[in-house]
Image (tube, rainbow, N blue to C red; front, side, top):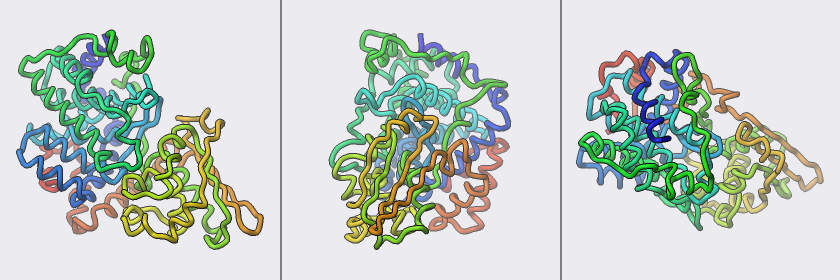
Length: 437
């Protein structure tokens, strides 16, 4: 059974199985996630969650940290049959690590495990295509990562899966509708909260339903398939590939499928003047069109969540402002009449060739038609931050410093970066938690 196989894999994985490349990559993603979290410390939904999490128990702390990491839509991504943001799992890891005062090596191991599980599940089947939300896979990845830190046995880890998968399913409506809400940043954090609660129950002896993947009403049937290809013998282990090495770190704080469109726009911007633009066409793949390229709200967003999930809006903003940053998604900016007038000149269509290349290539083509009759075009396949065009350690540090500048002095930034770069040598995670609180 899949649940048993996943649990056995999680129970057997050790720190010694992680290569130096994997450990270093965990640190890179950890730094990125912490920077995103600290930048969101004062955001409205984070303050709401902070009030709810005043009771200092691991599930609620996981809910808080996960919301902070996710809020700006600036944390990492993984694209497969189902897209995901694997660093969402770090909220769950931190929730348990804080309570158990976990050693840095155990934090790294749990994080690598969570990435491996979620990404492998994303490879197995699409949830989005059947009306379910990608966060469902987090029930497994966050639950087993938390259980690993808690010292649960393989049998207990199986029960974590059994307790969560049939119980806490989330529909895709979280990311649909006339406007996206604050809950977009909280949906995975809520999954992590429930997964941690289930891990505590499993530790105490609670059992859940069997056959949660293969059963008559199991998750495989909910994706309208007869079986999944999910061979745990191929998962990351000593001298084999870990999925964290295939994840993306974002260059810009917007939905992942817009990243190559933003880069294409910024690269062609010196060749055009906004006043000379007649119209703009963005050609994208199915995921880009379905998730961020359709619906009238994408052309006139009323929430930051809708704005950062709008390909016409980010292309228009990139052209007009020459950058995409947190200020791009403030109400003052996304309601600016001059910017919205430019956005109205933008259309989005699916390009079947780009769809055929997806998910290995998440390309966008931005084509600007000028009033002179000239056309300027740019296609980007592997934007900065893609696994084939990685951001350097220095770029990740610079992103971290930019995000945390309003909160931390340069001295505190340096100390925290040093702590995170040497996470494997830290006896406890608590110094980081003091900064996040």
